[in-house]
Image (cartoon, rainbow, N blue to C red; front, side, top):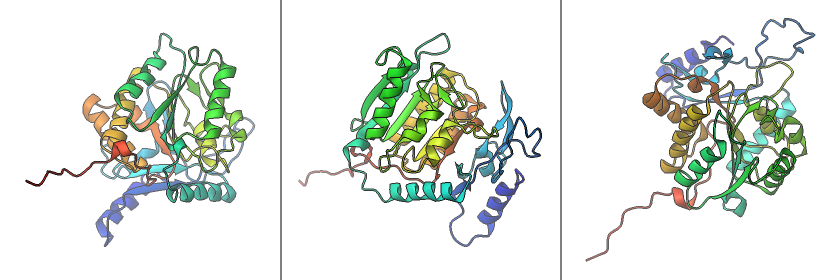
Length: 326
């Protein structure tokens, strides 16, 4: 897949389709950065179903996945359609992910677990005060009908073992959204490993799937051969895991990630944008308008169906203005 093939197709469709122009682009298939299959002893050979859109975007790592650019029709560096990836490797995985999406879209969405939001934070250090960042979101952005639950390393959970158990218990019982802020890598959250890729197969939370939003490093770096990231493992787990994730494929500065996070929360909760992919696309536009060019515009990506609609809560509804009869 040439990097310009998808934008060219979308541009053609916008001009020639009789009906509404495309608004969403779903990439069905995993991909990796080793297009030529070099050094198979180090990089295990894998199918490259939908290669990542590689861009020189990360100011520390250089070239990283930037799938949103598949939806950049105008060439201004921002997606014009909402882009999401279903990072599956086999037909069985594809069926499992599609089944989860259909079940989520057809759900009633009025159960008690859908009011729970799990906030996970690394212990504060010289890089960022992650518990403060999460409390700021709870205080300033969370609607009144959503109930925050905290797993803060070194505060509500004294060590990695207790934090990991609390995260697992919350996911198993059902939470509507998970937000994590802290350090991380492909296969772990925090240096202490409060959540690991090896913990994911034990999840049995089918029917209670959260949207996971992470502001760390590399949680969504799906393009390294033989090393799946937490975001894609959670997405494609049959019978559990997550319904979607907004996660970074690169490194990041916590203060910049927090600014991006606040805009995203405003789009979701204040503006009531329920389509997850469109919410991310709007967030990127507002972030650039406010702060200028930034690598987060490329590296924060959606792992899931970009047309996925989030449930509407009581605090999200815009009630019609009424007046008393005189």
